[in-house]
Image (cartoon, rainbow, N blue to C red; front, side, top):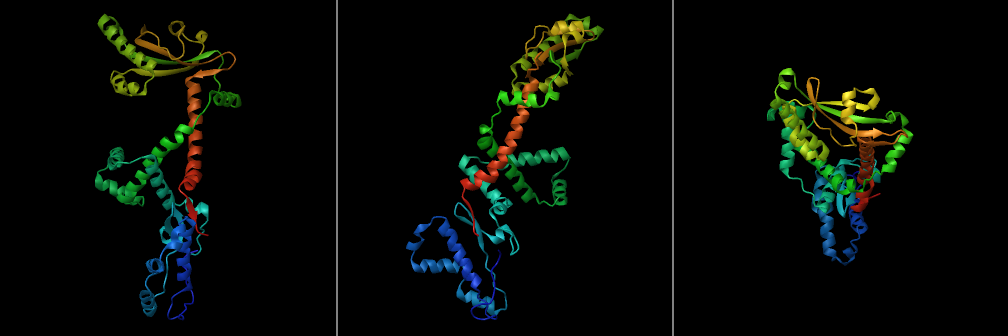
Length: 355
């Protein structure tokens, strides 16, 4: 496909092409395929107006021919919800492949589909959101505005089209969150099946997964009951947040505990018989998710949290189980999102390719 051209009805020197007429027919075919059945009721003079709008006036066509210019008419090659898309918009030529998949996967069509779906879902991306993202990129790379534009230029971007791309990605993620994510489910049975098929990922049987949190408390610290009490209070507060499991609480206190130099150690999956007696006694009786009381161990004040377990029959639960579940859900979300953008959206918004 591409621009039609050929021997004109007025001869080679007066090139008013049959292609022009064919392209006008192609334009009306779009309208017909879009179920605008009322076209037959349009007065003939309006049809003439449409012809002139698409092909140009007869006088302008003759002027093109007289000037020696080759007459070229843009083709309508596809539509989205009855809105035509021209070949120049898709940057196609006669040799380009214009099947349904190549059109629907084009950057132009995907961008318009995102905009239409966002409107249908009531999603609006404020320019401040894009500004905030760009500000973060500049900060991470240590760039001012001039340096940022230079970096974009090196990668073939202008600030305008990079903003458009960022906005598109944010829009796409929000559409996924609103339209795809709620449909994606991973059952406990699917996680169990994963472990059955990946036995190397199963921890040693009869073990528990343990996290340890420490604050240094040397001899001078331990000689002061007030200092020990203060460190226990800090760790007790941390323990309460760990038990609540609220991400917002964890994020809120993370800076505080980092400042106070709380050290976290993942002890992995352990057996009580294989760890120090004092630690084994501390975690004894803790259920998954529970946190021990603060305890002075050597030169530290410590708390422990049991995060998961593997029973004697190989049943995995807790943190590792949830980690695998999250991984399976993420993989499924990626696949469902691909299907959504490649198949569901083009059908929903009636993408049509003129053959």
